[in-house]
Length: 348
Image 1 (tube, rainbow, N blue to C red):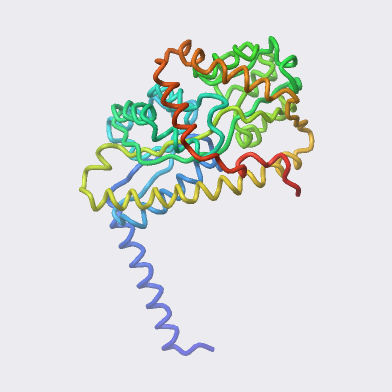
Image 2: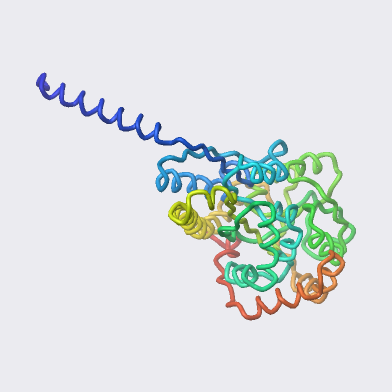
């Protein structure tokens, strides 16, 4: 039995804790919004959660709301939110960045980037710097990015060779570089929003689509498109942005705290990408109904595209200097580690 004195002491401690928690909540006089792409439980979402936790710890007066981007909260609303200071931070996939600054589309030139080291080299190339500066005009301060793997192709029919690909209708994002690439490979690209893929497959409007393996699994696209071709043709990456006002309002001390929280989230993303690549194979096998192949003539795919790199960028509306800068950056960068691409061979 507890003594009356002990019970009183315990009650007092609980009351003090409640008061402390209430005081802490009252301290949070600013509400920030963090928008993220990729959907719930995606790597973008998990990075956003870590940014929220880090900033609320570093800056007690700030409380953060997380907002998932979808057909109602699109990139146009997020950009407008930055300009009006209604959105303070965003984690945006490279697909969306191209809608703000088309120059960033060239950073995903297919069969050029092999991993995070190449991605870093391209991001900090002369062309990469110029592309990122275009984003600054949207009142968005670029704070960092993270690499999260490579894109593949999947569909209602198997594609294990270029011959299988010929004439097939393939869904792509609104990206002229991706569009010109699939034309070179002999397919018929069609722009289809990611959230519309499953319906487009079910209605027979498309034969194939391209995208990241984790998104294919998360959206259960395998129900309508059970054939998956591992081609690793283009990088998947996301940028982290802070509004000009949030970045500059309280001077360098607050900026340092925001930056520290984001750096911690990026460090998590690097580890999470490794873990993600290691469990992808298990996730594919757990579904059971997915048929995975690696095209026997994949070297031919790569050869066709790399020979046409300069023409692809030109037809997509980019200057010749874009390819020169990107190619030189990758050639000067270190060869990327293989961990991001070996999930197909992982054993349970």
